[in-house]
Each structure stands twice: as structure tokens, then as C-alpha cells.
Length: 303
Image (cartoon, rainbow, N blue to C red; front, side, top):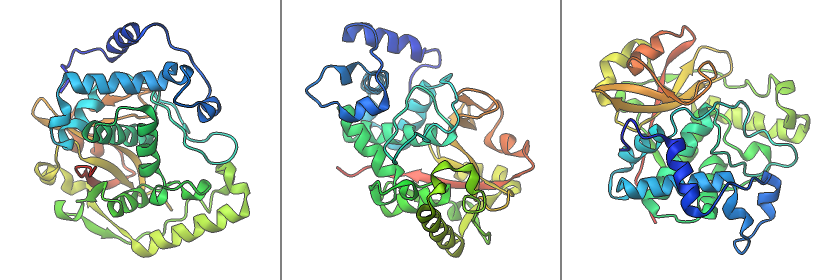
């Protein structure tokens, strides 16, 4: 694991200097058209961060460690990275959005998982990272319009369990079955620009009906403290919520620090990636709308 006083920004500045100069920023639309033969793609900030992270992983020998140890090691290296809302909502047709410069809660957890898979799979290229990100973010790994993105956390967990990316371990940690109607997106259409397409609304409703029928398991908040020993370093955490129509309202990573299982996450309220002062259970206790947690455990990726 990187040393606690390691400055990610300082590390990446050194990496940039070694690589040969300042960043060259290009738009995401521009990225789509660049090829491996161009030098411009190698100078994008996201790609620099990817390579800096892989260099850091090599320095720490993370490829030889279990993925459950890789996830918190890389997660801690992003401490202080700014929060940005709605980071995946790009204009135009649905496409893969990459942003390692700033995160919302979901993209932080997802990006760290994918970077960790890249470390274990010895992925060396930014295109390889993009392929892994698409595989995790979209249903079956295929981009097929806005509804193909895994918008609900329990759907993301279910689909990635089918793809053998992770395992839902909530039930083994004392979880109970939730009977809840999931329909927030289809009942708040005006909040989602792509849902001006009635075909997309129909597909989202179909997904929501499947989620409602499937249900999900969560560990009740008042049981989390007693079950902390069953949560592993690097487990992926979703906070179940009492908000009508939603399964999970926030996400992050369980990390062991100073002998305590804490919560590493990118909260809107904090404005940057941070780790909870107290335990994961202490963090959950502060929020009335949080009813418990969903817990997923990353699997060692197969080549």
C-alpha cells in the first residue's frame, strides 16, 4: 500500500516530467477519434493519470497482491481528488466517458475497481483500461444507448456478478431481503435528459420492473457494527436508502486504516475523495435515510 504521506499530485507531476513534459488536454470527443499511432492521445490528462497509477502499482508490487488489497491501495492514492456531479452525463449519444481527474461517488468506486483489475491483468495501455471500464459499466459490457448503462447500484452488482467481476456477499454478512419498488428514474423523467426519448423510458421501466421482481439483500444499519469483522478490506459498499424508488443512494470502499474498518468515498458534501474519521458503522449512523449496506467483493480477474 502507498505510504500515507505519499502525495498523488506530487507523484503524478514527477511521472509527467519523466514522460516528457506538460499535459496536453483534448476533449472526450477528440479522444474518440485518436488512434494508437498518434502522440496526442498519450498526452491527455486521463491517460497520464492511468499510467501514473500503473507506475505506482508497479512500485508497490501490487500485481502480486490480492485484488482486495489492490483496491484500497489505489483508492488511497486518489485522496483529495475533486468531486464532480453527473460526470457521465455527456451530450449526444451514449458513449464511454473517462474521467480520472474528478469523481462522483459511483465513478470513484467503479474507476478504482477497474484500475485494480488492470493492475492484476497487467493491462499496459489506456485503450485496455477503456475496454475494462466499458465491460464493468454497461450491461453485458455492451454500449447500446443510455439504458444499457447500469444506473442502479444493485443492478450494477448483479450484472458484474454474472460477468464474474465480483460477488455479492451481503447475505453472508447478515443481510436480509428488501422488498422495494425501484422506479425512481421512470418517475422523475425530467431529471434525466436522455429520457426525453420515449423508447429509453420504456427500456428503463423494463429494467426497473426486473429489479423490483429480483429484489436485493442489504445488511440493516443497526447490524453493521456487529458484522464489521465479516467485511473485508477493499469490499465495495452501497448504502441502502429509505428514499422512495431507489435502492442505493451512495457508494464507496471499505478500507482498514489504523485498525478500524472505515469508508473511503467521494461525497458531494466533502467535495473530494476522503476517508471517514470513524468506522464505517459510525459513518452510517449519521444519516437517517441510510437503512443499511450492500456489500460486493471483487474477484480475481481471469485473463
